[in-house]
Image (cartoon, rainbow, N blue to C red; front, side, top):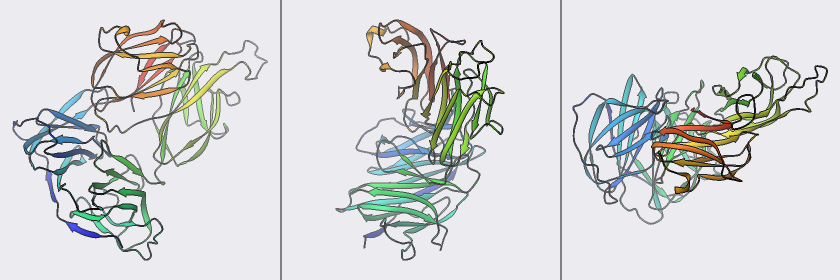
Length: 457
């Protein structure tokens, strides 16, 4: 039998109200405690939190910021939103919080943008007895406001298990101290044993605190929920239920053809994405986790194929299918073969909910007329010779991710073989929490030097 005790925690829920500007220092020290900012505002853009005008963190819906360190004392906390273009706008309220030493503090915005609410959860983080750790569970789901929580051995049957606790939105009653171990984390409706959400296996480590936050799955029409785990590391992880859909976006990078259609399954029915021009991006389409046959054809043509593949979509995945290459339309109207096509595609995993400070960038090489490339992210006016490339020798239809600090930059793309400049310097600017995908395509109509296009979720 695992060891279980109850420990009190301070939990304060307030409605956000406008306040006068206040002060506060921004010193950060390991002698204080740790803080996380969690965004559970269901209709929000990316939101940000600033501590004493010095330390900032951002989080998209259903995600947590990185761990922030603070020193004890009264701190002024303000909030802002990050627009889709990266601009920020301050929200017209603030709160003063008395922060103690050796505490974990969760600052949680929830509700809606028209009815913002704030919960500040302060927990003792002093050293525990050997071989024990802390567990805290918060429920902010409007779809499942009352849940029994089971924390059991993986092999234990819920018919014989006793609920670990019951959580009622939007609050929790405290922390639990448990033996360090690996547990199965499951949620049911109160008094029932049919699992409505299985978060899988979680590790509770010695002298550590793990917080599990229940939230509604963003964009889902049913009762799907997510569980966000915050366990004292640099970032949180999202525990995704198998019933949560994946999402597919399509970008057409075929540069020498006017527009294309994308079908899921055969082409007898209607396309799911129609008349997508070169360089155009669709929105995301929610699909059940499964394998799908994808067919991309010239717009209005059902029997000629630019791309045909089966792609797998897992629960919670957000992916982009990009087609690329050259259609090279045949001059012979009697030749219906696809032998002259030089088109292809790539499925790229997207990050829609950034949990890191700075910006989160992806770069995809989708230009068949360019060889392997090097990409540099430079400060304005900085020469290429003054720094190392972000990536060297990236081949066609490969991608890479990087996370620069917020600020102004210039992108330069070189041919790997001879350092000849393909594009650049292209001025770019990033805000904290911004997510941007860059694609290198051929120039419109095909061929070099190519063009760089940016897309945001």
